[in-house]
Length: 202
Image (tube, rainbow, N blue to C red; front, top):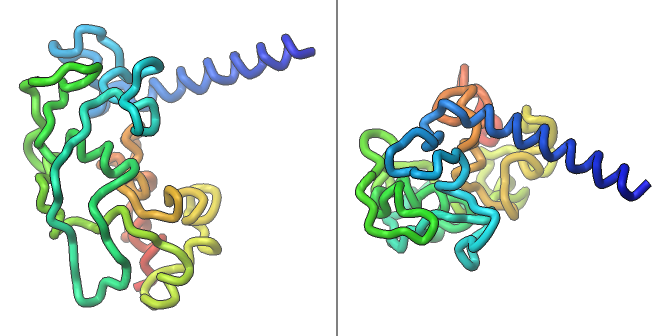
């Protein structure tokens, strides 16, 4: 019985990894055909099963940015925004333009950098804030936000369950780096501002 359960789990993981690999395949995050990626693997630029960067989650394999960011601020912002952490720190490892995309697997001194609209730089003052706690208390204080523990995300559960990481808004709240079905790697369509209106009630 134990062997059957283990076999079932392994088969499920195999199908999940095939599906996962197909969704990223051919997107801007598929680096398998880049000359600087000698392995030809899709996942290895960001993730590794062995010797991941200490302290980073998701078996992270890419050099982390050490930049200090200029943050979004506004007189109407009720949240406390700090320096990017969590998955946002991982995203900015490439998207702030301070670390080469080909700095992975312990390699440094790469020469391939993100350019154009995808390169956000270190001035995030004109970008949606990230790495702040979004809970029911913030929604009540702000008045312009939906309560995350009871509002449907449109992704199968609540905002809290589907879009927040440890109660925080991160880049991954709105973007799925592994699936570009909705364009801009959005987690769902933003037609008629549907994605924005998931959290914002005006």
